[in-house]
Length: 287
Length: 173
Image 1: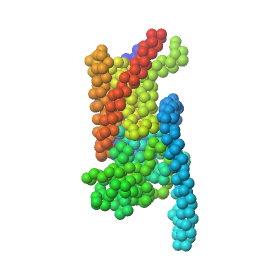
Image 2 (image 1 turned 90 degrees about the vertical axis):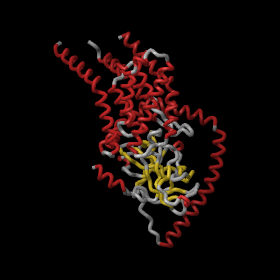
Image 3 (image 1 turned 30 degrees about the horizontal axis):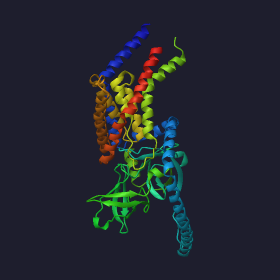
Image 4 (image 1 turned 180 degrees about the vertical axis):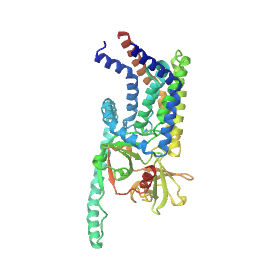
């Protein structure tokens, strides 16, 4: 009885202490976490990986009813656009058939020319196809979780593509899942080429669907509709990956329309080009 | 002596507000393909935290607010600590003002939430900008805030149902 009374007394004391100083403690803890995140601390990436490991099966199970509702909403909204969608698909199918013929011809021609020139092809790229299981598109972050991790050979820094265009890169890897930073996330900065003149610029995300181009030197050489590809400058992405086109030009920024529409993608391709580039030095620094 | 099932049931009811917050976070987290609204995904859990702080702070403590914040940080993939900071501050301030809010008409509490959500969103906006070194677009934040305020009656009704259920359970125990 005495012991129980003692425990109750300690618990009451702890509660009153928590009432008084808890707020300071929690706020301090949260601020420390934010600062660690700013410093790119390995503690934070460790926490994220641990979250991916532990929470993915839990959230997958708990989200069953949420997915059920989402699917029903999708079915109802798709029902109303069924006829239009069918017409569009028929046209697209016809176009694709024509394009397929062209591609077969071009591949054969390319192979013949490569043989004539004795061209040496670059080594084959390792790739994994993964399902998107969750995304965090919001006003504050733009990233995805895909169902492929270190167990499938996915590594930090791997390139993520969909529909033949760049979508983002892997930033955290757990054993069965990986977190992908999208091009339009505010933390994403990619050196790119713009247009036929290959003007150098930096593509920066701002958490909207249209990231912006900054730091381009000759504004008059950039026009609406110009294609944007990776320049490969930082060594993280290889050169020439398609990103999108210039949509709108302001004084010192240009809005970009991305090729990949996140809402129409359920599977992504994760590619390992064997490049770590600038990521290698930041990893060393954080270690 | 309480049986093991009674203890489990008590434990479940104890954490049920936290589970509701978790469910709301998941609801905001999973992909909903709403045309032209890809970036607009408010954190509905903010409503539940405000509601519990005003009407039943003894059922949802600061530890739960902090844990829910960390979970939201992981789920929404924002810098670690941002939602945790916002949830704890929101909970503590709303709890401190509950005497003023608790017996007021619904629309006053709703307006109160409007002010709280605005501060919470601005805090998030600054914290994300601090980590990224660049401000994110302002418009999605404003739209996200507007949806959050508009959705308040529905989410607060869920919280109200849970609190009513908890009262009934307590009466039978």
